[in-house]
Image: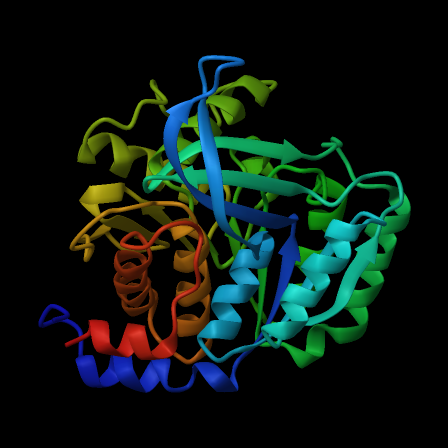
Length: 346
């Protein structure tokens, strides 16, 4: 049950409004492939297990897992990203369309393959992961322009903008410097699932949702990049205790001029920082942790949708904490449903 400060009735009211929200997601789209099998012997060719394939399937990954979560929760969602001119790109587009996701914002870049991650799993354990990608420091000017033109043409149709940065080249400073001020001008919610080396891009947004490690790395990167020093008043980038987390959160909130910062802390729950308010702790709701893959995607999806329906940031953070508690009990990066989320409140 939510704490006395919150209301189950309100939580259900917000979640039942998810289907009225329209969300635009910008980020690195990935095709996830899973091969599920069994192991009964070691290869005579090398000391590695021989996996007998039982079944395989594809699912949207990276930023596309955020859109999958949003769609599964009932929201109307459009994905913006890029794919290669290849078979995997077509599979990813089909997967997204099948899940009711608008893909008009996905553009083809002939110079790179569609990012694909193949995971081989046996006896409920991942044996190996095979990645297919060509990471560029920055997308081509042509792709940047197409994305910006698309957002300029359609931003009025959406309630919120999510930037899901997996560090694969789509998200860059030029793009962020163009789309975030536009969304602010239109008074849209802007939430960021960040890549730690890009934290400096994300100023004056509604919220950033890093985990502990991402926050530590971001502090390190910001301090290294500061030309004059002293802008981020922290002596260490290690967030070992609550005091360290609070010092870092308050400094990042001020440095980036954020409305809020939500740091996820694994088994220790979350810590929410809001402009002009004291840090706020949210205890974990997870009953069993099986796989943390995709938990960050779930958090930003539910947090953003909750804000769009009128929830306070504390309420939105707590609702997203319930959602994270569901997804870590499943295997792989999977989307939760509105029904699962509503049932978790009881």
